Image (cartoon, rainbow, N blue to C red; front, top):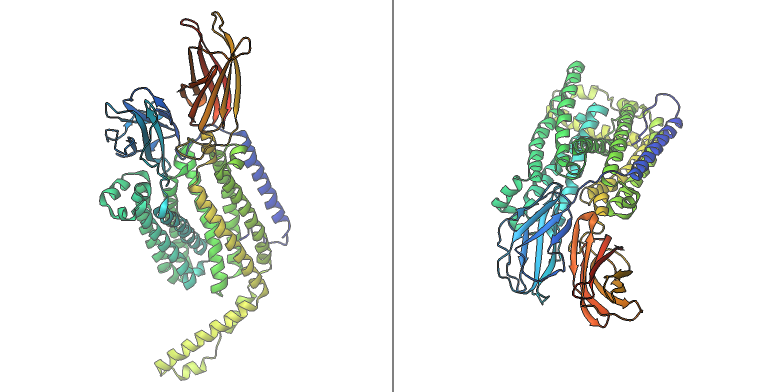
Length: 636
């Protein structure tokens, strides 16, 4: 519906232009804040490093394996598993130890002593602080790489059929919330007569039922969603108890309790309130329902804010209230739009005053959405590159585009609203007047009177529908609102997708993530030339390094050493190490094998993360002459 304020006077053009100017200003502020950037924020946790590193070959068996993450995570007994080449557990199967210090989040598991040489697989799974499950796997080798029977998991945490059903429930929960809150607000604020309309009652009750059922499904599936991925585990009492001890589980239980209060609210709204005829008493009850319903609606919205993106990262104490306001504004606008659509199509009694009141509500909702949306965009995106180069940013652009389309259609609805009068309603009221003589003549026959009453009601409804359908203003408004509702459904789906997508700022900071967590980042071959001088006789030369394909993941590394005369030069020892200082990763050692005079090579060199890597090269030309040189290279 229109996002412009209702007008009493004849200025149908100025207000849309003023609203467009306001929206353009707000859009400019969004992009300005995105360009300004901000401090780091977190959302989905990402694996930032490990010891041993992915693909590393260590001389002796380590005592433990440690994993570092970008934010706080929740772990269980089997969150980190280390498997030997035959697939048997190489760790002690104890709960991971929390080795975090300051802002560094690190967990480790102890390994059995005396592990044989070979390739070991580390599989991990945890729950991010924003309630989303994360998982991955990588390998390292002791002594030398070997064949392994362990198959790396192909399904991400939260995927599979359980993940599909859980996501459907999430979408349904948002839709139910919008209908419940928006429909109730529409009745109380815009059209109090709607409390007696059966289609309006059904809309709100169906919203409550949908939200309640979806919440129950999410609560039961939470354990398999974050764990095994098997539907049978939905009824595992121990797993359900562990879910209740988590922040998302507490949020879902709180939502169910609040929905109990919402059921009482609905009973009063469509019961006592609908039957109340005294205007003063009805006004007092309206105030009480508005306060009580507002508290319940804010509480339900807070169950999302306390367990998802808003609850993690910077300024969580501001982000959570902003998220609550954002959800309430979405419900008031889109839920009210659905209510108006039902009223226009299914009830003949709604008048122009109710439509204009909703226009004011829609305008206020858009202002709140713009303000909270600007803040959320700044917090979760933070830069132009994250806006255009990440899935979260692209979904955000799509959401803004859909809102623009919705506002454009709403402008046409506003024009129809300006033309709408109550003449059709007056005609309908006149149509209801029937001669009383026949009724009086059959008053002695109650059965006949009831039959005539049913016939008269059916005839009146038919007349009302005919008059309503013949009203061109009302018909045009119905079509326009129907188009708004269609766009709103897509908008709500995109908004729900955003809540389960890793925010752009975090995805960009991870720069493609680790090879165990995501696909390798795009890159190109790296070619370096590094002169050296060990200080001894024949100690001068040049190191040439090629890294292909020069991206995150597995790479082939070649080293050539040329003497001062430009000819291939052999040296007793050559060592390399890679360090990503910006992420405190490394040094990751690389020991190349000699292929020919002056030529060394190392295959399957793992680059865990894209960034500006420092490459240290140690060259020893005699027993006592040695030098270490370094150079930075952009990889990935």
